Length: 258
Length: 333
Image (cartoon, rainbow over all chains, first blue to last red; front, side, top):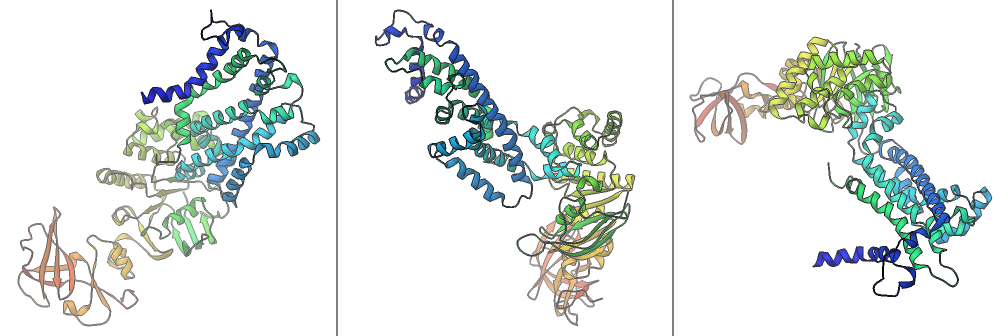
């Protein structure tokens, strides 16, 4: 009973959304529809497909940059004698604590000066600043949990620190990389505030912006909004289900001695 | 192969006392030298300084004729075996053995030849396709040895390689390392906290305490002629007895050190013997360890397995041989 209630609490809204997306638009207020339909999905159109592609691009780029920079930096912090590395981690955390709304207008000015306003790379940049600390912390704790003798062995076997990172530590960090990747991807995929503020060209909108702008002045196309949300959510849900074991392994890295 | 020469080597970390103070030690080409001492004595620090995993605060490290201060481990041509084996979990045994050669960019054919040879020598040929997690402790240790051997380095470094093995396997691997040294005639530097391991393996033993070298001598000499009380107490099981001379009916200054095997225990008084009471009798199999009290002192002696006295019985003891320490603990010759 308790379990059922908890399950309903989490899955209920999602089910409601799924049903709404299949409900004929005109019969939304009825308790039961005459038939379920895919009309809402069909009505999403090319502009939404465009938004999906944009979101994919931005999220993938952000993830790639975060993993590449974050894991290399985390390795240095965890293994190399970097002066002031404790402060570096704290500083990175502080950056991610900033309320995004407070940074929107300065960021707008910065990106405009750089000529990156209203462009997808212009979104990747602020996303990375917010997602990188998370990657850094996750990867650092993972690298710290790997035995020190492994690094020493790699060094004695002739590796430079960079080779030790590429050939020994990176191949071992798949669980932490997967965890970081998914968390960063979800963050970039769902981000609305910056995308809304920085992107003005309709062709460059990302999914959250597209969904928000479905609502017109006079009409709320609930069916389409629900259908679009389904399209936005399903790939993520699938991804997380697929990798859930690795995600948990990555999140708890270093919590107990392996 | 090459000699290793340490001159005035010192290492300080940011906090606390220096880890190593003014260590000078020459390890000859082909020699097996053990660095021993209690934990925190600087033995592992010394090994890291030779390997290039750490840089000395003062002094020089020489491998062969070359001063290697400031060189990276890759440029020093040394191999190391670690306590935790430190095998690469994502590579199979073949990959582990080949790794140092791949990093050194050897030819594919040469790598395969050497990996095969090494696997043959250590009897791990049938393990080549396995991952480290599928191996037993002894097998992992063998692979770790192989990863060092495959490189044919100038110097082999061992950082407590047997500490993670159970007692029986430790003895077996100990013999194997000794045989390996006899076969390769290479320079071995071996760190351990186990005095028995150092005794059985080494040509010479260097004992460190709190970052300072106490004595470097062949095993027999370090056991029979320790320079001070600390060295005397570090080697030998049971530990050397230290007591004032008058307790044994002798005269003179300082304290006496009597090895348990030098303590003669008899049931009747003899010349030069003193009366004692048996406290504890421990049969270890081949021999018996007897704890006795005399006056306020306690001493341990070694007796044959058929030692007949029960606790509480009277006995007479005599030191056949003793060392004498002055007030600072130095041995008086």
